[in-house]
Image (tube, rainbow, N blue to C red; front, side, top):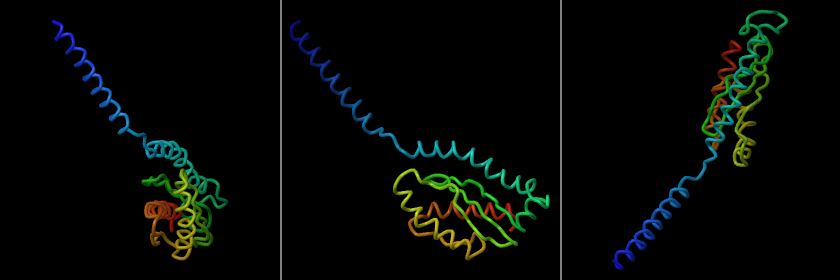
Length: 167
């Protein structure tokens, strides 16, 4: 009996140690990622942005001095906000200003800026994308090297704004 009593505590120690090590390995392998937090924050901002994105289109028809439909009045002149486009790193949204049927200004109203790397990329990518859009007078713009996702989101939001404006 004495031998059995000794082996049971040893088994318990071995099992407890194995369970502890397994638990620690599992906990350490499940590191929290920042992407779900960013997506949640982007999704929370996106519904707020989407009504904002549709409101200028609606306000340009109701708030325009001519009172004509949104595409006609925006093509003549006005400001239209494109759809918020969800990218891998966060939402991208642009606002365009149109005067006499020409694209006169493009402003990024929403873009990923949650971490220093996003800020660095967008600090050089957004001005290049703006210049390209104004020069092309369309959404047929080149992708900025190193900012592929932002460029794609910018292009898609720009096209949405131009479509809403009737251009």
